[in-house]
Length: 177
Image (cartoon, rainbow, N blue to C red; front, side, top):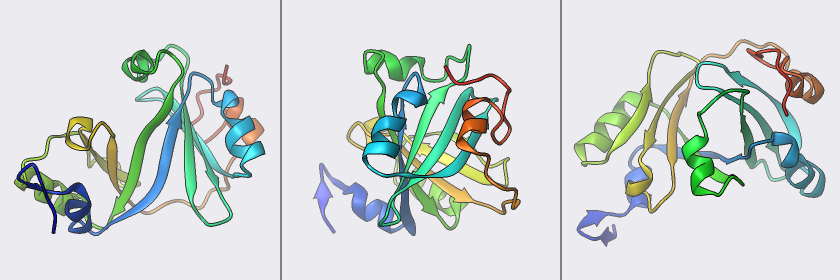
């Protein structure tokens, strides 16, 4: 166990949470601008995606030959969800967060709080996806999302064209810019 500044290192903390890395999320003002790199150049296979109209963003995931995944994100029209992030990145976007899956989100939250970590965005209300975020100041400038995926309906993934047209999962009907 390594000690960094009097505290156990983040790797040891996450290992104690039964956390498994799932994906890296990259955000930009237009997800269409990310596709030539992450899909076409690097060979990501489109898995599906949808809109989070409550928070104001659209996502899609790509999977690579080794099974790793990247989530691409953009704000929905009129959303301020990424405003502070885009201010920090001078409007370009970039890596937004790292996602780790945990088997028990409530135990993870209790363990992190017990160790003095600052958390935000706790959402236990959605059975499909229960989550919390570890503040970037706690993880050397990186936003870390811990999530416990729940039962999923087995609806087919929308096509990429449908997703970009605003007709993805929970789509708002407004096309991507």
